[in-house]
Length: 154
Image (cartoon, rainbow, N blue to C red; front, side):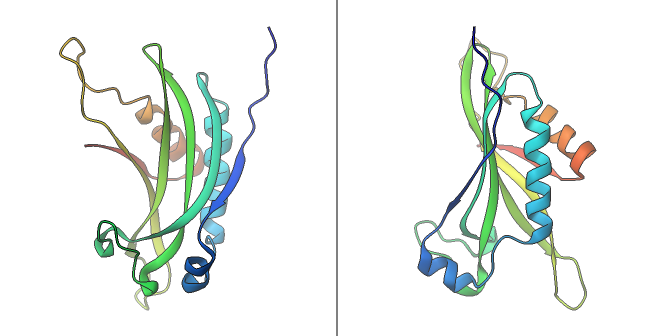
């Protein structure tokens, strides 16, 4: 049996016009956080296909479904995704960075966290929807990278 070493891939998914409108890339502190998160998740058993990247997005309170974010609220949101096995099935989980409240009185800087949305559906034969191991991952990220991450069930 041949084993392939885990490898992290960084992908930037953005439209050039949107990136220009944002005027900024991924903040350095977030780049460091995502790199740490990738190292942690790569070392976890049952996890593979780890990838990081960024795409244009906006804060949740200014997003209208199907419409591009206003230029003043657009920013390059990093993400980390990985594939995990649970009950014999594999699923890809993607955590996106979120900008939270401003942390400085002068308005400079943000607090960041990561979140993913998981299906809240489950069969009547199961005890509930799978969390795909996200609490274990989130706890490891908090402990090793000082990053807050949550899973939201829809």
